[in-house]
Amino acid sequence: MSAVFGLLVILLQVSHGVETSCDGRQNGAECYGALGGTLLLRLMDDASEIFKFDLKKETTVILQGRRGNILTDLTKSRFSFTPNNGTFRINNLSRDDGGQYSSTAYLDSSGTNPVAQTLQLIIQAPVSSVQLVSECLSQGEMRVSCSSGGGDSPQYSWTLNGRRLKKSQLLSGNSEGQIVTLKRDVSGLLVCTARNRISSVSKRVKISPCGVETYCDGRYDGAQCYGALGGSVLLQLMENSSEIFRYEWKKKSTVILHGRKERIVTNLIENRSSFTPSNGTFRITKLSRNDAGEYTVMIFDSNEAVIEKQTLQLTIQVPVSSIQLASECLSQGEMRVSCSSGGGDSPQYSWTLDGHTLMKSQLLSGNSEGQIITLRQDVLGMLVCTVRNHISSVSDEEKTESCGFEFFDCTLLNGTYISQWLRPSDEIQCVKPALSLDISLLICVLEAAVFFLIIIGIFLYFAWRKNKLLKGEGSAVPEEVEYDNNSVVMVEMRSSAAEP
Image (cartoon, rainbow, N blue to C red; front, side):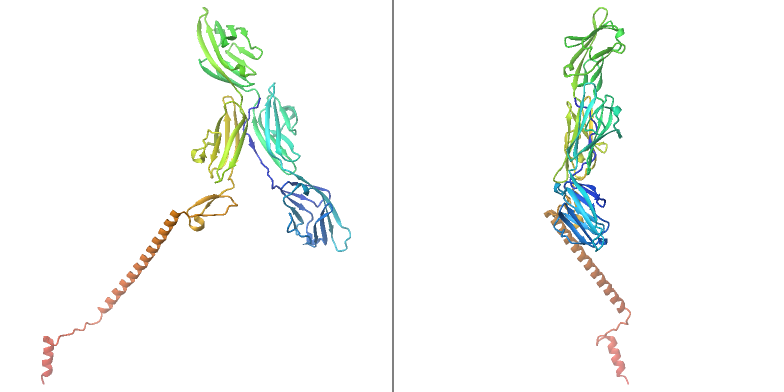
């Protein structure tokens, strides 16, 4: 039977492109590189201080130099060399790069006393996708196996609640084996780590003892009880049998328990069951599918009349276990996440993010009780899926991160109105829709009209000011009065002029 698991999570996932480094200045050094990754190989301190040097793989010359000047053309290869710190880089490592390398350095022009060194390069594939599989044994022990989906020469180690597994906790195996068998009473946070020279991957699981025990109060008619396959169930049938004249408990027409007061007369499954008269509880161990069904308890008085009768329904379920989370990035940066259990009857699912139930506003599709959900682009945090049935519960968590998309606001670039989610490799394309084009054109026209109205207003203001100033200057000069020739004044003036 599969074990009851909880909190299954990948702590570290290693992929190709790993960069490793090795000090090759010591003769006989053993170096490791990741398949598809990069190796930084330290050959010397400073090439400018060395008269002549070279690097060979077996008999093939890879690098030659003189006083810091590189004599070998590396421009079209996967190799590069940095003279000032003597570091040789190999990119995109392949299996063929493995083997023995030798370097020779001539410290002066005399060519005497050359410094020769060798190193062994080993190429390994990183370990990845660790899987944990558990199995409950006949006596309640738990066998757990740890395996890596890939990687060369993986080595395994186990811890429980942060400490290395002790011999006292193991029935067989050891803390560095691929398979361990835990004793019956061992529980807690179990972590398996698979590693090689260039990578390390861990997976952890919260384990509970095999043989889950459930409890059910069967003193009420129609009680619905659940038991774990391979576990035990404790059924409360009555208060105290010593106060009951006679009682009988049966499954359909088969009498399982028959007693008078504290004396048990019949117990047909006594090899894996027990009855406690003082508190009226009946325990069944090593539950099987055949134990499921409807049970009836009847209580009689001294006249053999039935004074109480209750029925209960017992359902046997397999505990949920081996929960798996799988995520996938969609085209617009959304994330689809699925949750599944490797075993268990009638599993039910629930989701939380950072300790809170997922809200509709965080979901593009699905719901917080579905097996598959799709998160919106901006939803990040610790995502937890819980799978449960009536007898067990398992959780798995994953820290959600951006699907390689960044939110780019085009309004910051050229005044357009469309924003979008882009991968780092995507070309930024801010497309302005026709509606936004019309609106922007209208805004430009309005801005121009306001500008011209302001200019016209300023012009009219200064014209009015000028006219007012001119009128003020005219009022300060004496007014010259012109008279008509026939006016009284003009006649008088002519008369005065005619007199002697």
